[in-house]
Amino acid sequence: MKYLSEESLSCTVSGLFIIASPFWGRSPEWQLENYTLHADFEKALPALPYIFLYHSFRENVVPFSHHQAYARKLPQSIQRILPGEEHLFSKGLPILVKDVRSLQL
Picture: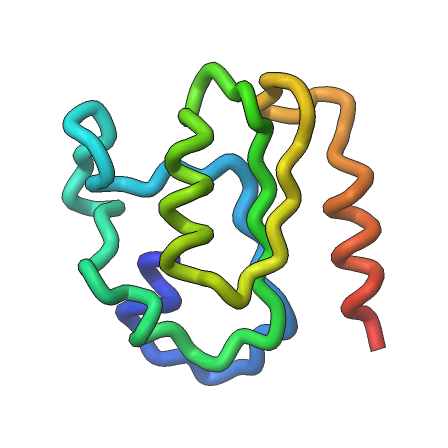
């Protein structure tokens, strides 16, 4: 997200898939300057036809409030709120596979 909002792209992006991502800078324990997004990062994003947000509701690594912060900044996004508390999705993430396949032309 940081790269897309701060750099120019020379290619077309069909979709962006954000999986259990921290919203860096959101709270004191999630401060890392190299990852922190600008306050209005969403305005600098290139045209992205699809943005998907995936996050477990009771995740114990990155709090669900980070997902909610992204959802507020990216209201056009497709939100996939997952049951459970997984962060690494060790058994896979079938809904992600389905979403990627849905974008194939």
